[in-house]
Image 1 (cartoon, rainbow, N blue to C red):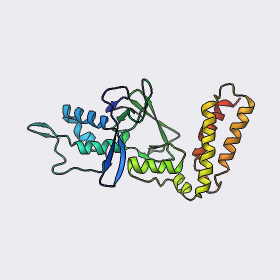
Image 2 (cartoon, rainbow, N blue to C red):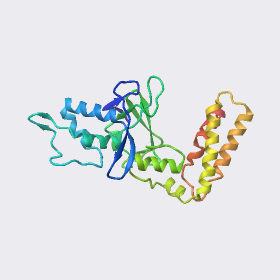
Image 3 (cartoon, rainbow, N blue to C red):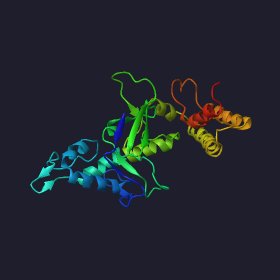
Image 4 (cartoon, rainbow, N blue to C red):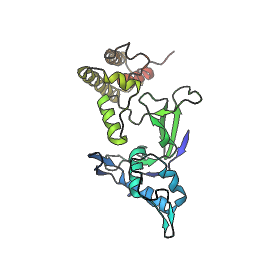
Length: 257
């Protein structure tokens, strides 16, 4: 599936603005792309025929009064509070186009059709970006009637992933991977993440092109040590995210002949 963004605010544009917001409903402080909220609200005011499409997306705040109203005699009606909630739950970061990005100037956008796709840490589709186009690719055969999932957060760190999902999207994941990781001992999870961090440092500093045998052996050791922290029976048929990057490096460094 390929979808053009309904609206994107790029990190190099003057409209970009990220702010800390406090939500009295759940007593949480969140980072919100308020620049995108403003841009979408202004776009809807200029094109009221698109209001219903955006307002149909999931948000915690459903509005007050006649929430279905999109127009009055004075012009278009846009509930900015609903837009804020919808953006908070449905926006994604396509990455920077020019220069470096940070927390204060992160590029963000809204893809309406993609927003209906739910999360799973065991995704059957993966999103990529080409400018403001989101390209959703199947990771394998998807049967007719089978739900499509992609990962909202791809961190291999169980605690970090759950915190991000709860804070940004308001839910805890209960997929087979999270169910298995949840039963792991805290000490074991910390050991796994330490090994994964070391492996990531190796991948970031050692290019796979023309990798020497000593580098390949080191990568194999990382993958073996990380996978040893997974119980084979409990993780049968479940991806092992912590070793995914170093195994991808190995696949490139040692192609099949």
